[in-house]
Image 1 (tube, rainbow, N blue to C red):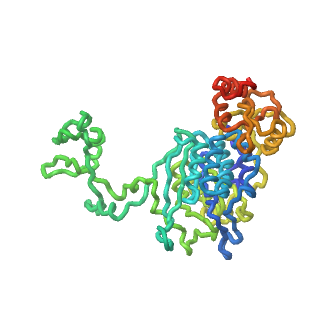
Image 2 (image 1 turned 135 degrees about the vertical axis):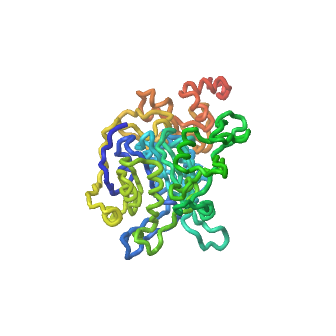
Image 3 (image 1 turned 45 degrees about the vertical axis):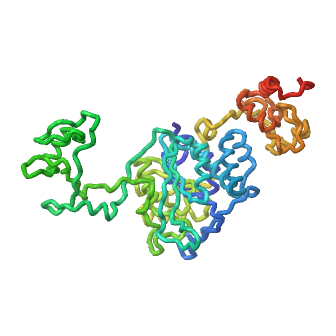
Length: 485
């Protein structure tokens, strides 16, 4: 891992892509972020609030919002990722495809800046969560998908002809199988609290838990302890040392004859952290309109929500990043929990709100580093997610054509003919632009290393690696006409 080329408590102002691309690789422990949802709406802050003037348009267009270099990069180097983007575009709309492309180039950089032990929480909703999951599976690997968390943000929603939408989705991924994890707990429900129905001599509430466990096919725990032997199908669930410790502390309830009850372990309510948190979070309400936490920012989320993510997937002193930090919920939550943080946002008042919230909610009067230029990378400048690449980037210097310009150039040179099987097509849209040989083989001109192939040849070539190999394979299969052999 490399050293960070940015400071703690840094806020970058501008498009987050250039700042993400400027950050050194593997320098962030956790990313917790709340990007746009592609809800096809315009959002505005409350006029008289701390966030007055904040607004953004959550509408997306392939023609307006997608840069050609994004398409070229993903098509050439991350074909599995492009398939996920195209599936969203075709199944839903061009707008959804544009949003996926916008997110994909940023998620690639987020993957790169995360440490191997790092995690990412991506806040979204059912509008695009399933398409985003496909994109994230392509980048992070489906095996590193940990949870789809459902946050119930409201109890009611006035929807006339369908079930009310009262929840958001949080996609939780890890960078690898070795990641930071701290168990989190949720408050007990009323039914669970009712189980603490006993009181000791000091009035402390407790419930009784079983000291034994199922041991039908095991000899584990099958010993006599203080005159009590578990039944044949069960055994003591704890070591003799642990049982004796609880006995000395008075934590074991006894029978009338003084022997321990097998269901007699006293679990005190005051000592219980709560029930283990599952992937449905119903205990964190939305921010009330009269709450002192509310800034008026149109999509503000509760501090408690992001504090849970930060506690679970980072430790004190770790670096937390939010590339869409808005009204600074993640930076404030990180500061309150003793973590370092970096935020990025394009909103002009983000710096003012970050400073005010840190002062009012954390009591921090220290410096927040405000930057409008990206950091300069001091690492090896490796590209994002190199494991996804089917080809390596080794292009010679000099002017380069866009994919569209290359396509037209090759059509002028060879016409609508596949350079693998030499079949002529009436419609050039059947032809796909690809490399003649992998760029890692090097040394080829930027244009001469491009060919137009039909779909079957392009798929076949991916397993053969060279155009000459493809032609030999096509000849073997009898795809080429005799006069061309």
